[in-house]
Image (cartoon, rainbow over all chains, first blue to last red; front, side):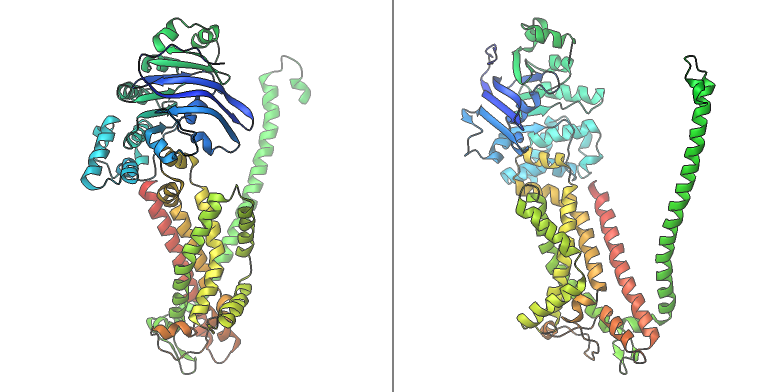
Length: 260
Length: 307
């Protein structure tokens, strides 16, 4: 099934064409074709196992690491298929950053966590590197809290701070698309609120795609929402519209809390 | 008693009475197991302590600065074990320098490719078997290969080669095990950041696993330094008047070392006085304890740094 989607007003940043993914011959995504508008937040919602995380991880090819995965279809970034054999994974992931469900700072200092990417990708050193790190930490709304402890371990931070550190680490690599896999599900409400504000803020400058279990969160932070079920896109459109006037009964049942 | 709870409106007391019997039984069980395990555990600890205590008691009077630094004198009947300590440390350093990179690279290889490739699974099994191979086998292998085939003769170099082979399997296994403790989330984080597989390994996985790897290296060296058999036919000399000097010649000459001194000294009673043997025994134990303590120290220091 090809999803019916309202044509976004913005340019498309990344799109999938008839994308199917299966694990161990068990289909997780069935021919999904969707476009993610540039410089906007798109939320992916749906019941557990609906394929939203699979869709997210297909866009920076993190699914490749799973044994017995089969992927067909295309994912176009700048008009090029990222599943083309000539694609350089390093380059792809430099452009498409990712934040995981559970914060995973590296066991090194806060500074090193953020500096690692720009140092390895762009060879930046010295003062320039310090500026890049500060800039990324500021964009992740963490700078004021850690500027005096840059040499402290990233693991000494609170959960919410760790997640923002991971966001800063991603931003320091200068991506254009940010993939977030339930970035708040392991956090307390106050940290969640901070990350949500941050996502909304980032959405003005980056293409943000966020998987979430939290419907209110999707409603609060996203411009567009995609609702998936059984590996297919059921409904896709502007968030306000989708939540106010869902076109499909499944969507309505899900967002009214009748299942999932 | 069981019947009391069968009827529908069974009283709380009937249930409690049933539970009380089980509680008493559980308490007896716990008491029995706790005392049994406690006794066996205590016996083990005491055994080890007794061993060390006896050696310390017998060896301590001999220990002195002179004993630790001077070579034997008067046909081994006097003097110290300085040249043996020196030789043991020399053997160990060479093995450390060669076995560490080999073992760590081997471990990295197994951890990186181990699960997918059948060849690597076979390698893992072979290395595990090698790690359990008796040291005398390494000694004879070293004799055949380094001493005879390569014409190194009974020499420090041949001893290094043999001890390196002896240490490598254990280092491979500990490196592999340490790398497997690296959380998958960290690896994913590195890859998602666009790091290559090798960058992820080098920048994230290895630093994380380093304390474990170093512990493995030091422990295997500790084992090597106490073994007489790998160096028995390959590097050892019993009686040496040579001063403890270093030069290129040292490489081609056999060296005295503590375990060999102990073995030979004991076999020739009357030549080496008993007090010297006890002293050397204590020295060897202290040397291995020192290495183990070093391993623990390194591990806790590194863990504390960023974890």
